[in-house]
Image 1 (spheres, one colour):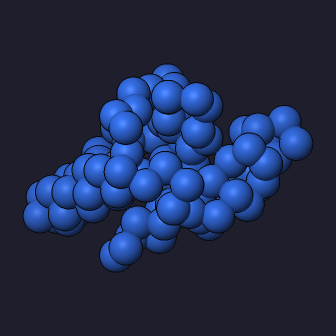
Image 2: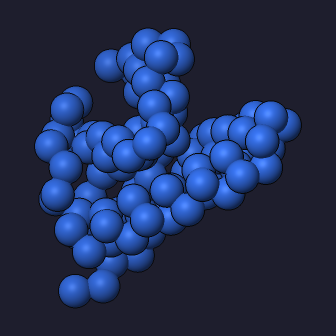
Length: 98
């Protein structure tokens, strides 16, 4: 079953900020980060329930070599990506209102 993936504006902004940060130091790191995000999104699209619900209804998919997680939820045939967050940033309740 093919699911549509929707990035919220906050997730897009997170990606732009992370890519900017990695490209400022090492262009190869930015490329690896982008590949890791694409690979994880691919996995999520194939196995949307493959990651544990940590804060209902949000699932956290960690990026393998980076300290980031893709925070998403599954709604019928849509995967909604809310954030791409470094896991040492501000508390999540500030972003989810919970």
